[in-house]
Amino acid sequence: MKIEFVSDVACPWCAVGLASLERALERIGEDLLVELRFEPFELNPTLGPEGSDAAEYLRAKYGLSAEQLARNRENIRRRGAEVGFTFGERTHVWNTFDAHRLLYWAGLEGRQRELKRALLEAYHGEGRNPGAHDVLVELAGRVGLDPARAAAILAGDSYAAEVRAREAHWQSLGVHAVPSLIVDDRHLIQGGQPPEVFEQALRRIAAERTPA
Image 1 (cartoon, rainbow, N blue to C red):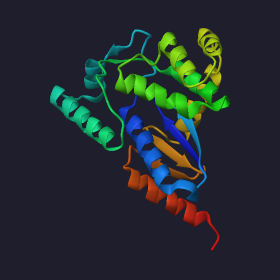
Image 2: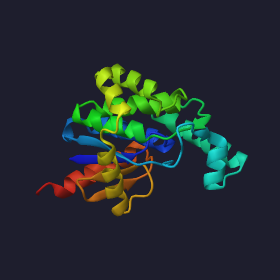
Image 3: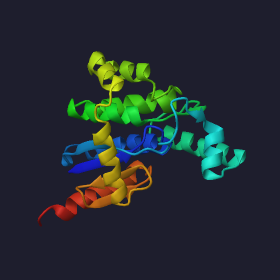
Image 4: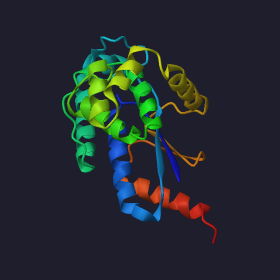
């Protein structure tokens, strides 16, 4: 089974969704062989390298009051804790395009899932800048990628065209919210669902394609 996980490093529900999906896959175990790929989506594509204050940016973008924002954050923290993801303080939002370029390369090197996890934990858990080249190089090395190659990629425009093409592809198919999971090019599951929802959906899809 092929699962394409369309998401952004900046998206807290993507962190919840990935942790939840991984719990579901653990429950399914060897009953299902899954190829998991991560696809790019940018929530804040127009942000400059300096980023923006998170509370101000989110209130302006979504029209949320301070109280609504606080409730949303508490809900996200609770949902994360339920699937083993710990949210820290995120006081800033940044552009994530370079993170997506590095994730594209990591996919070619067989380390995409590890780098995705490291990026989500660095930003949502530690409040670090997922667009800063020093952070990206450090995380690349941490998950077994070549730091020198990572630095060279970030210093140029490697994989920029590929990332933009993938983003355009998903937008053309109507994906405008993340996380979005596309299963076997046919089935769409959206949102940071609980593990049991992912598990039930994947088992159902697998059963539907298995000959009687």
